[in-house]
Every structure is written in C-alpha cells, then in structure tokens.
Length: 164
Image (cartoon, rainbow, N blue to C red; front, side):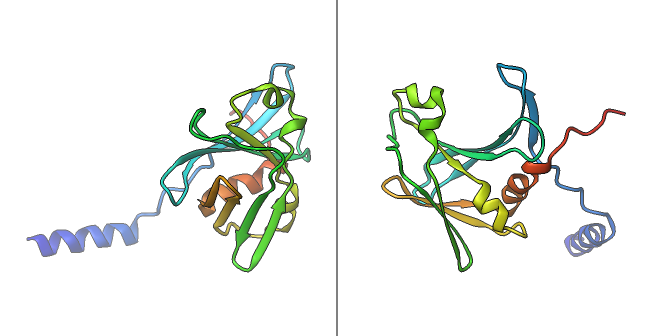
C-alpha cells in the first residue's frame, strides 16, 4: 500500500504544474509621497545570526537601488564606512557604504544598519545566481538565495501591476 501511495504522489508531482513563485516586492509611498519599491528578506549568516536585507528603490523606475543590511540593535555595531563585499562564483564586487548619506541612519545611535549602493552589482548580474555577502568585522558570509537575487534584479524596472 505504501508503495502505491508513493507512486501516486510521484505521478501527481510530474503531472501537476508547480505553482509559480511570486516575488516579495512591495510598493508603498514614503513620508513625502514618493513611491518606494522594496524587497525585504530575513537571512542568516554562517553563525546563524539573523539579518534583514532590504533592497529598495525610491521614485520612478530606473532610479538607484540601495541595499540596507540590518542587525539586531544592541547585538551588533556597524562602523561606517565599511564596504560590503559580494561574491558570486568567480566574481567579486565591493559595494560602497552610503549609510551616512541617509540622515535617519546617520542620526540613529544604535548603528545596527548599513546601506550600500547596489547598482554596480545589479549592472553586472545577468542571472539569478546565489550570492555571498561579507561585511568585514561583522560577518564572514551571509548567503543570499537566487530568488532574492531575482527580486533585487527586478527593482530597477519594477512597476505596480495594473488592477483588474
């Protein structure tokens, strides 16, 4: 009986189409009314510490994309400027720390967040390959799965779907 049940489940998986994965990209207005499009994911580094990775674009499509890395306040202190190193296969990028350009983060004494210019990386990525982030003195490796990379790559041109 168990053998037949296993065969039935295997056959169903082959016959039924897989449900598409929908990106977790959301749009909302900022405090000035400008549209902000973002991808928000919780990721764990190799020491099993949780981090929020928020990639966002303010304004119309084509605008710059920023990556904000947020740690738990009180557990981590992020010094600025510290470049974010990104690895993918044989490629390596060094993303500029732009935290102090954000007045809210610059004034936040908790120092639990850092922002980076994501555009140089996005310009070079042509597929949704996994990434490994390194923030010297903070974490050695923060894995970013391909579906998150896909969300990030969609941000420069993302538009709200028309309502039907």
